[in-house]
Image 1 (cartoon, rainbow over the protein chains, first blue to last red):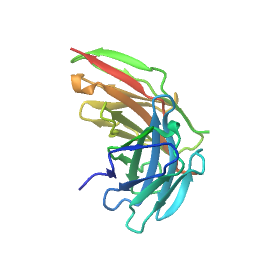
Image 2: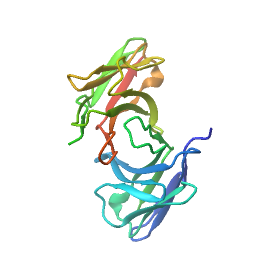
Image 3: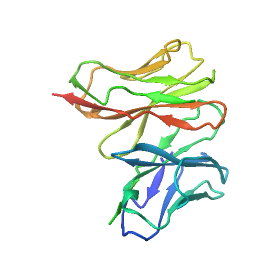
Image 4: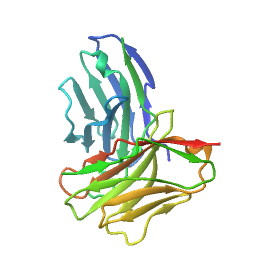
Length: 115
Length: 115
């Protein structure tokens, strides 16, 4: 079974631009979560989508948005990029069961650099 | 509120020796799952091991075992026979079975295996 895939793997943008990152979950997984990882802030939760609906949301400004499609693929969009948005963005998928055993599997990440 | 604490920012271990990475958690939910992930320098988060709150026995996966002490709310990861490839960042995480179902991650422990 194929793992979680993320595209693109690397991205360089300038301040003020917008960016869209894509995540394809493991086949059969209905939940997709997004995380931002920076050296200073560590791993921070952005949001989770389950069956095309946002189920959870972290404490990020409205410039960060996401969506999930009927095939469970997900996209994350960041508008009006700031230098502080430079980070590794990780996507994780899980079956989405509403219990503590639901294991998340991560993709390789997209490394975004904002100049 | 959910909380995961990893008090060891960095650790060293000699090759072929065992090492314990500490993790304590806080939750009021009686049903939850505990997870450990490995993040090599490449950035991808790799799922290592899972422990359910109702599991009577400690989880094991190859050289990884989880020392689960429910009363102390600790879920330490034990790596036996350390290898150079074990050098990485290790994250402890928890997911409750009720409420928001959010994953909560610790701040991580950087492990360096010495030859």
